[in-house]
Length: 117
Image (cartoon, rainbow, N blue to C red; front, top):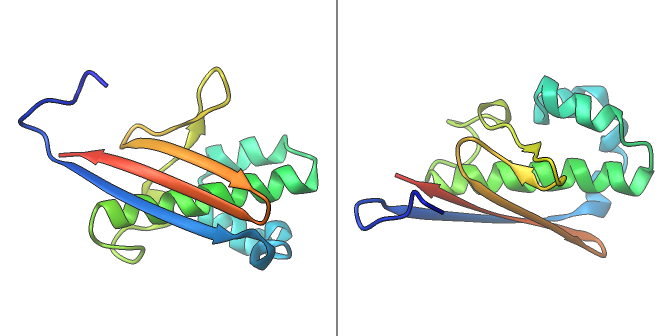
């Protein structure tokens, strides 16, 4: 984290998603188009296992909510398409606007986001 110095403010956002609430929505094109950018939808199109698809969508949803919380606005002023979370060469989530961590366990997906200002 070479960007971190005494002149930068760090803002943190977190969100947790109960994935069972989204099982049906993962196959709803209207919902997916609302949440994911076209690049994220392309990644999703290559995920065939139902649980992995659910984890991907819920993880992105949680991360975007966490980002909006870190920015202090919540979803509304910031839309789901204002932040894009792709994958680095190792498959980890990456975002050009923030540091992002996404985790899944059982029925939950959680995301933490750090924004530097």
